[in-house]
Length: 372
Ligand SMILES: [Zn+2]
Image (cartoon, rainbow, N blue to C red):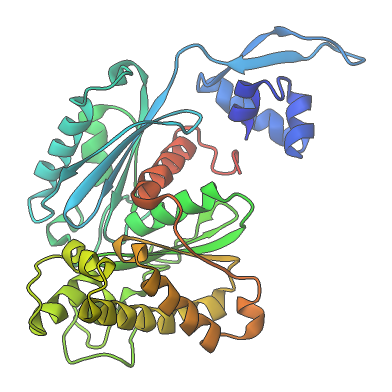
């Protein structure tokens, strides 16, 4: 990418960038101009001529910029602060109660961010914030239109509220999409990937050529309400019966474990039991992996990605990944799985904040195509 190439000194003129990044001179010119206008790069005078006019040497601008990513999950919110090059400068976690009014949740998140004890001066350097939410996001209006777990947020103007309280650009995105973007950008050689977030809830994101595919109403990748033949009579939060969410989500697993007499109250406890080799916990988690794998057969067969990444708390269990893998190998056309990478997400709990950083940096620089 241009910023890294200039910062590292591997290319310091527009023509060097064009050669190094295999971009046309006009594309480089437009993108460099945007970075100059945003004070990310500056011109440092004329360099050596290679025949003809002496080219302007580019360097990174003096004032460092930082970007913050806030990734809200079911019960916790994770924060990350990054520099322009994408180095994670600090990360931390706080508890979260999504049933509170959005104003309260957002102002406590902003307090946690601005009050954090950091080595960088956020006041002077912060250029933008991304917010990941566990609900589909209306991309145009940057708000939640329908969110089963965020009922009080319906139509709340999230971006406007935040921008009026912190005065930097804000980008709102679905949490699974951010995890998918973080994973995809971490593997730039993989052009098409699907990332599943398997935790308390199930979500997934699709990234093609470095960009999130949203679909017509921001619902692309939302596999939690696909019907599974393993379904029970348990109604889903969406109003239907038989959704994958009611069988394979962490919430459903904890409920089933308790109904079977297991004395646990949360998904982390169930996962810990499985890590310890508890057979009842392992069986539940293997069945969940199979149910998810069955649904993913259709998804993967239809979309034909290069990679399927599995993140979220359930993905820490090899039996879960193995169950998904065996369903895919058993149920997909061999051409679909022949070169398909099926892997645990590599960024772990930080995938969402890395994706959030990528999103807000792209947004601030108005350069969705710039970097990848
Ligand atoms: Zn449903």
